[in-house]
Image (cartoon, rainbow, N blue to C red; front, side, top):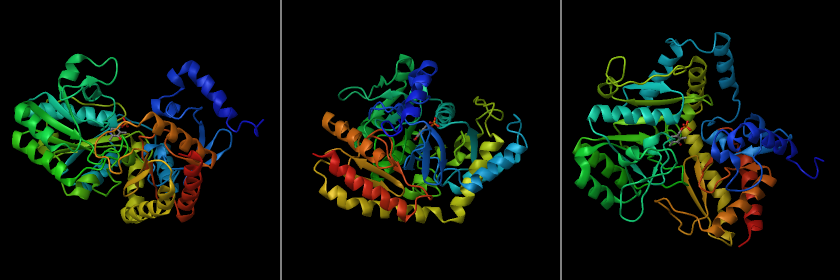
Length: 434
Ligand SMILES: *Cc1c(COP(=O)(O)O)cnc(C)c1O
């Protein structure tokens, strides 16, 4: 049985799951809709590997979508979690670990003086936006097409058609009134920014951007564009929010703010700072953060916020990153992987480009070599990705089941792992054909 169908247990579980969980998953991209087939149910992870419930082993380049920068089940992180658990899992009262992690985050990130912990990236951006509106006394939020900031109502807004900067809801159930308070601009379009700020600058509370947009491929921005956002927000008295949920503690200790040398007014974090546990955070200067309850008039709270087990996992992760000079190593490994993949890219019979910043790597199937704005894959290219994904999976390599997602290199990936990725990639590109 195993020989004919190596995924029979995953398939059976998926069937069970679909009866009691919508679509069988608790987050949509997990369902493999873009690539077809049945999602793998994962039994365990170790270092660079994940093992599915059928006992198949895969070299994992998803890393739970970013948090696992040290790989799976890192001994120091697991030990920290175990120790914290033994003392209880939640108190709903202050604890030492949240102060320690807050000190670490504040010290690491440019311009940050205070931070508040929440339980997801979505909560972080949602709370940052409420605070920005409170501080400025304005309602309008500006976001960019191709950036993802979680699923809060005012951020689930997509670009409208044509020249209109008025958006449309990118989900059912988002009130028109929320959409009306959000403006959506294309990335890398300085004129569109100038026009909007000229027209509505006095009404803008905040601009939110992924300074390293990594949720619609990897749409690396020119520093001049980020600088323009810094200048224009300052000019009109709006706040600049860097959503560093992926880039924070990954592209540099101080995230994209350090990498580009641009200090935003507020920043949001998640993923890595939870060490694989559910954590988010948002931070700013003390002047801004003091508007939050209980000192200020802006309400924000969470039963499990600053959870001691999650805080312990975050602290342990940051400890290892510091001890292993992670950021130089991650850059070296990313560069090495890019170098190993280059020959296969060169021989591909279809449009294929590598886009990389540090340990974030995008295998782009778009025609353009350097995309800076959100693009839509042709039907042919989407079909090619589907083939490429399954060819990689058959060769024991797990990449994200979507052409718009990046690959995450971790400290657990050693030279052998990178070479195995490259060998599988070369074969997969060849069988993907023209
Ligand atoms: C993942 C992500 C979020 C949302 O975080 P969740 O923990 O999934 O709610 C927000 N912003 C960015 C940039 C992200 O990558």
